[in-house]
Length: 100
Image (tube, rainbow, N blue to C red; front, top):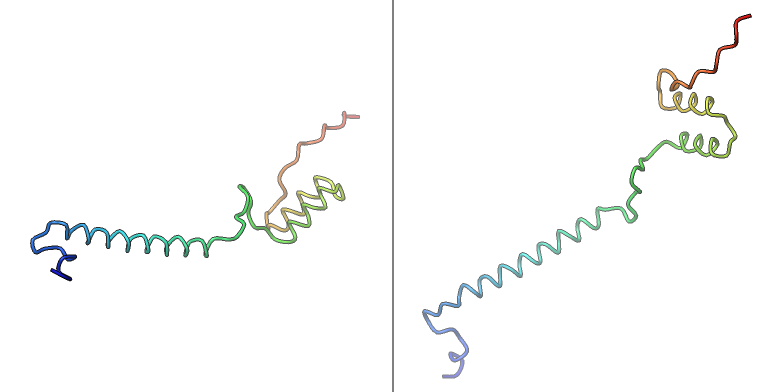
């Protein structure tokens, strides 16, 4: 018997199982490579929800406004200037002075 004892006899119906196992191993390797590739392309720390990159000027303006170094009207006008808007967003109108 010897070596032939460990081989599948001719006509054995389990040959497809060997092929299926090989296919699953190859699919697992491909999936692993894809996951690793995606991980390398992803930033280490994903940005927070609602965060978008902005210019250093806008960031500095936001900091100055948060520190109350500039008022709201000045903040909105400068922000509009930096972003290239035609006009600053409208502010609530001050009550009109009574007619004299």
